[in-house]
Image (cartoon, rainbow, N blue to C red; front, side, top):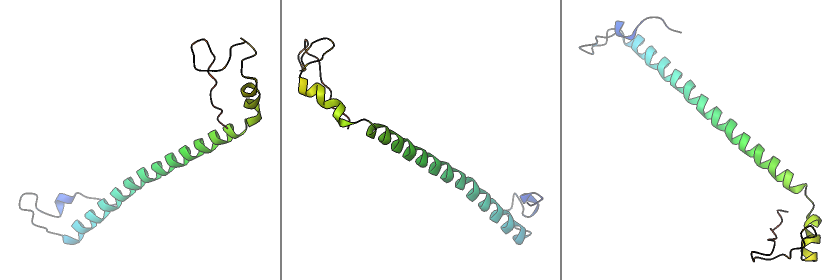
Length: 101
């Protein structure tokens, strides 16, 4: 940490530098502070990317838990056993959705 104000080391109106070492120190510390703040957003972005990747892995594992044999029987049968409607695209027919497996 540093103490003092920047205007004590140079003239505000004339921009004449009285103490170049202290002005250089203030600029160096300011640049380091900006780098620290910039690093914060990089770290937050990396956390977000990891979170999205984790969600994708969890969803793909959920889909892979469903056995594809579960969808073969209704396709083979050709109609729904609950309401006895055939599979098709007409308004009176029941639409058979593609399985996700």
